[in-house]
Image 1 (tube, rainbow, N blue to C red):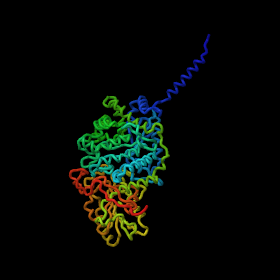
Image 2: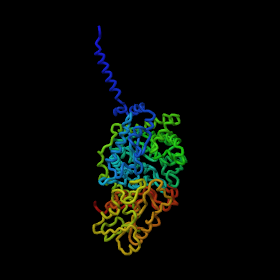
Image 3: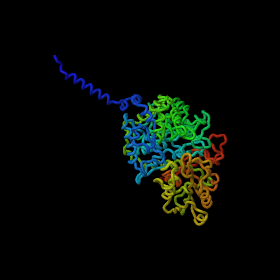
Image 4: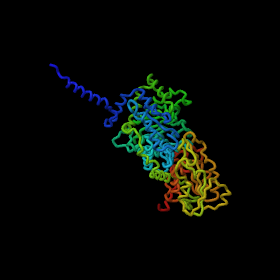
Length: 635
């Protein structure tokens, strides 16, 4: 008797359907699966080339969709001044990020890339006629003055606003906060530091939950955390000791014993890890002669093993190149030393083919163990899974209205007024000059920095080293003064008046605004810290003729002792950025002065380095100093 083949065909068909369905199911793409199960499943499918690609971060200029696909690139960044096009809008940024992302998603495993940028840069690189940028910003210029406000809750709100504005451009990764402890103001990056006092820098790590979201109580210490699409990956930097280099020279050697390193420069990293920071960036500097980018004891031994940090460690821009002297002298060795030290993602940023080729050869020769590669990739994937990048890799314009939002500009203005430090108020305590009267016959406003947005913003604004003039939207201190005083008050502006001008005019009082010109990193290293010309002459001329308030716009204390005696009042405004109205809010009594010095104001550079707690401590104004005033009018 012949049996019908139909039942067997049906069973085979069902088995094929089940088999096909199972083949399409990828555990790592299932958000219901445990985090570690997703990581393990994805890594089991990855080739060496795909793993090394994840460890590679390249600059957007070379990040074509084809490059992303062919080399499995894990991350892209915008370097200083790197934009999709001049005057790029939010839409331009989102389209660029998505174009790059499509290249990543077209790979065999579809692992999305993550796009990184310095948060302060992001604010500056987006310009249009209807979207004002804010150079006061979130990571660098803010650091020195935000501590002066002594308000961690304010810092957290700044972080949350930053996250929204960064997300508005489609970017998911902010290289902030800088938690360096600047021990010498001659350092060109001192304004990136919150304070010379480690306990204060610890408090300022509240920027991290602002950027990433508050870590839930059930999340283990050291595990990275990003709350959702309105948050971004944070980055604690620069690990470790960058603020303690000899003579404040950028990328120099920090010479201290381990106990001092841990007590001065490490505390903020402890707090950052507890708060779920996702990444840590390594410093260009050295510790006792060993380049940090090659320091396995600190990166792997301390940060990863002892402190149980579970996010990923990223190099600085071409950081591994500088392991050798001169930089790049032996690139293969630099790759070996940096990766074996424990760096997980390399900010290449251009020579990605050389990096990938060298690291591949080093792994094949077992000079870099496969276990080291797996550790790096596991950490990178952990962050990408935690932030929901696999479920929602594409950017959209849903956050575009957050850019230049009124509430964010008000937040910037609040930060400015809370950070101003009143250092002198009257030539005697019985005759205070501040708050200034809004109503006066005629007042003089003078100085190189009173009508210059670029100078107010400092470095890292539009361009790496900043610029001069109306480089972005905002309010100059001069415009703020004009809009605040009584309509009957005549405001006379003279950038650098001479003695004849002063004799020919009668003023009720004068406001002189002077300070540093913009800089970033090594360009800002300064062994003299003198007040730039024509500042001293302007102070002498104006203050010798009329009651005067001097406002110093700078990223750090400067040599001002020779001029203080001639001033009636002195205010440290730091880098107030785009919201100059915050300065006028306090000068004229709408708000009181509350800020305190975030670092010691020295008398002369011969005293440096000099920090609070030193045996020989004789400052012009001590750490924590700041006079106060009360508001004089209802707002």
